[in-house]
Image 1: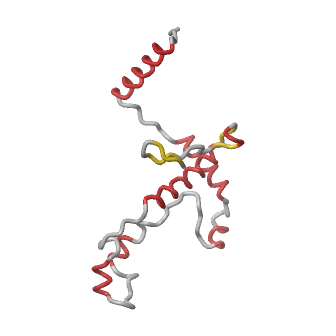
Image 2: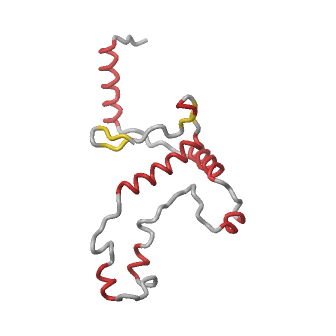
Length: 145
């Protein structure tokens, strides 16, 4: 990761062999890793509400928090939600096919390639892109065919 202009940039997703080759499953795996990194870098907001200070005071030391409504409403918020990493018990993993990370990544990549529908760009975006291309063509002397 490199910081440039105040933004965190990660590049190289899907690249193999020093960037000579590209693999869609590797891209999907790298994307999952990047999401995890982004989550860690983003940190956990520490506020009275997030830390459940009110409920800790209410329930008290040694109290039971698992069945409290606040726990139920918030327990998944900071949890990692990976599509590819299977954290189930081994027996359950085997019963559901025992697919490893690479197999799941290829399935996800194929699903994306076969099913993803790209939303068309807004007219203003198309006009802006055309303008940039036209400006570059004029600057570099590219002749239209």
